Amino acid sequence: MVVVNPSATETVTVTLPKGKWKTISGQLKQSVLQVRPAFGFVLTRL
Image (tube, rainbow, N blue to C red; front, side):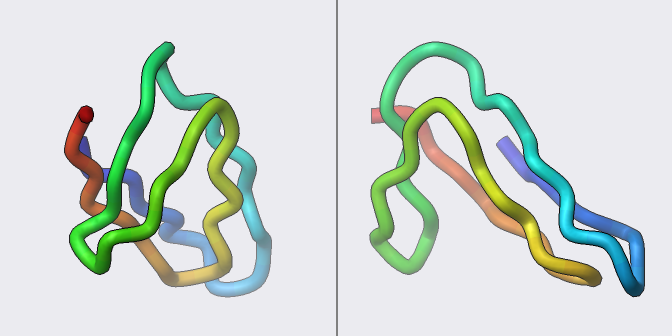
């Protein structure tokens, strides 16, 4: 899954689908993801 925040100024909160997720850098994520401005994540389900 790819999550992108296109805003240049606002941080967004994204509720992830049930389960455990891992970013391509190896961070584990669950439930809620904070995405800072002009940033994104590539996630794989564990």
